[in-house]
Image (cartoon, rainbow, N blue to C red; front, top):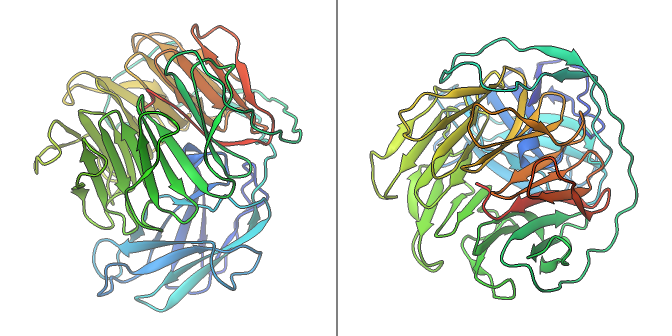
Length: 460
């Protein structure tokens, strides 16, 4: 991840990651802000994580809101509003879950962060969401195998020079559903912000799950489809793709979601984490309190979270075990996480990737050096990464094995791996999926400009 920090009236250079610019200009010396473009949530420019200081703790459940507007000025009704809560007592820092930007048509959008407890605000300059590819001239080397073990200690990175060029074309209509090929699934949020899932062969068509304008994100397991719709409500369906969805939360009450074959979880509007097991109509079990949930990952036997201070914890076994979480990193040392039934992965505070296998008390094995990991996807037999230059790599088998390159630098915006498939949204926002061997060919699923989010069943 890359961040832009602004103090008082000092302007910093623009950040170009598939968007035009984002410059933060605090309106009050009481607020110091850091905005981070979050590539793990989709194409660059579709999500922002923010951190700040100088917002005293208020008496309510939240201390302010982060707002995104439809135009270049912060006026009128926001497209999205994400609450936050201060940490560390009066005057302490505030941290929130990733705030997903609304998937509306590309164009200028302003942001505003309002500290209601102090009456201050910080206004972000307008930025532009676009399908243009990211570019890079600096590439960090992907190691052929892991070289050391550690839980949090950063190591130096090796760099080389590389570049790539991609082109963009107009998007096309999603093909209609067909049948055959078994139960393997591919889920996608398209350019019109519709939700689609295909089942079986990669040559099959997609089945529409949500209409255009009504899909913020989509996640899959072997038997479940989870979505956040246009109003920010969480829905899950189980079984056939033509079955009905079961509502899990109300509007504006789902900032992050995850599903496994027998569990579904959500970080709600106040930043609390909940997970339920079994029937979709059953009750949720609270895992983290308000303001304490920044990321969530699930399997049927594990729950992984990043808490309010940026620390990574994993719970194994019963959801109701009050002492079940096992700390994996210290505060501020987890940017992105993934869990599988026997593996745990984390991109730590310096941007290095570590993975452990087996018991939660086992040591981590270094996979990518500091500054060289932007996103991670994980199963028990595969590890997918976007490295520092925006290239996609996958390794199969033992953690000590080497990575196989899947795309060039600047050509991976979002990724997913399953036991026998791997998927990428490339630099022009086209979706490709390959099946079988890592050195085999990709099958094109959506054209340039037509893919925003991708999920595979079996991805955790």
